[in-house]
Image 1 (cartoon, each protein chain N blue to C red):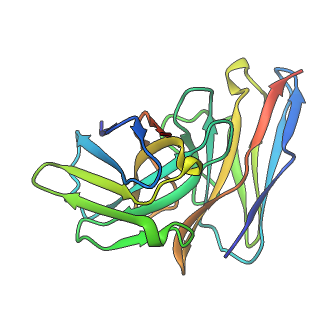
Image 2: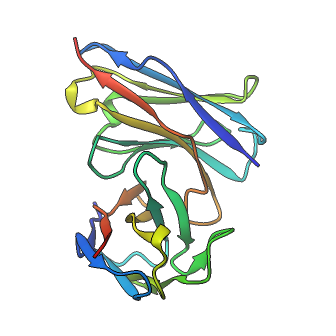
Length: 109
Length: 120
């Protein structure tokens, strides 16, 4: 079973700063990776699909990259509404299943 | 715009079966372009994928839950359902139903989530 490891667990930053979140897979997985944002009391929201494609309505300050085992989500300049928990997710073809990382919490400094 | 809505009991006794239904509006579970699935999240913890179903009825489950999970689909009602048997307190969580495209990796649409508590 593939494990997705996110780092760091928590980041304290200020609005206007840029940030890169990391997600590492325990084995090669191509680009079947998505990123989500989750705010308290809300369902996750899809930000990035297939590693690098922004979902509909997602601002351009969000970008994803990576392939193989290492993936990143970059927020170029943090807005107040970006402080939330971010999850990466693998969709594997064999066995067919989804695996989430444990999440990275972005908090206001 | 597709919308998903979970429904079912908010309280289930230990050893019993948790049953939830997801009603889809603005889209069809008969669409051949999507998987329909369930994801859960214990309070204060991360997301755990439970399983998914295709319109044909083909299912895939999380190996860690496979022995207890059944997901089914009812195209006539535009719904799909989750059954999780032999529940314990560890199954207490917010349960989300979800839709994700077959062609790309990313769950596009989520229900609002429903809290299910396992307690006597």
